[in-house]
Image (cartoon, rainbow, N blue to C red; front, side):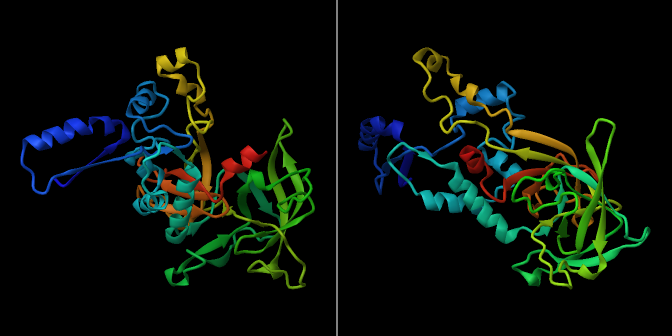
Amino acid sequence: MTHSICTLEFENHRPLYDWFLDQVTFDPRPQQIEFARLSVTYTVTSKRKLQQLVAGKHVSGWDDPRMPTIAGLRRRGYTPEAIRAFCDRIGVSKRNSFVDVALLEHAVREDLNARCPRVMGVLRPLRVVIENFPEGTEEKFDAPWHPEHPDRGGRSLALSRVIFIDQDDFAEVPPKGWFRLSPGTEVRLRYACIIRCQRVVKDDAGHVVELRCTWDPESRGGNAKDGRKIKGTLHWVAEKDAIPAEVRLYDRLFKSEQPGAGVDDEEADRGDAFLADLNPDSCTIVRDARVEAAIGASPAAGDRFQFERVGYFCVDPDSRPSAPVYNRTIGLRDSWAAKQGK
């Protein structure tokens, strides 16, 4: 043994450590080095606190994708390369401090952007009927697995009369600056064509359940032949071969940067004050998502994909044949910062 590496609370033990070394013969003599714990914002790394989270069933277990454990990070879809890149950037310190979790998330996005194939997944499907598209037919469009790596090949997308778009991409009364779909407006379907929303179908409660649209057959590939500019581009899946999936949307486990900080002495003595900072929206389960057929009905656990315009996702071990479960690893951008800004 050449080095003993430990956290700062063991610094006071160094005289005892050195005394022990004086009583025995080591060649070379081991060196003790202390360093600060890695404390990351919006989480806890204390084993005692993590045990409380598991025992209190605030998480599903030690491998819950919200946990800062190796098992949890792996299940969420973080790669070893991303974690190493994060550690290289922050370095080692002898000063106790918190590292912004956004640095870890940035490392994860960078790594997954380079490695993940692109597919389309609609989390909250809204049915769209293209009225002037012939029934029982389809149009094929080519799409790359990765736009920056054409050598990785591509897949074929089949557009048919009925498709799904995401509910969040439609507004009956659009706000200013809205470039997605609304009554009377046009958008581009990714890799495919231009559609226009003609009318809205609602249920008895007044909820939008279907859109009736038309497509421009001259816009195959996504560009209008007459040169008109289309600002909005939406992801989509065809109804006839879309694969049903469960999607688990994970967010930060705590709603404050330093969980449990700022409590009074009595609360601190209890040791569970940090639980008051749990984020109630840290896990949202979407059970009726749809993903494109090219991804396959039974992808392997651990496979990673980018759902275009949505984020990076990893196949969960809970998946079953023809019933895949996807964990959101990270969004395409820092949505938490945007929410805090609002």
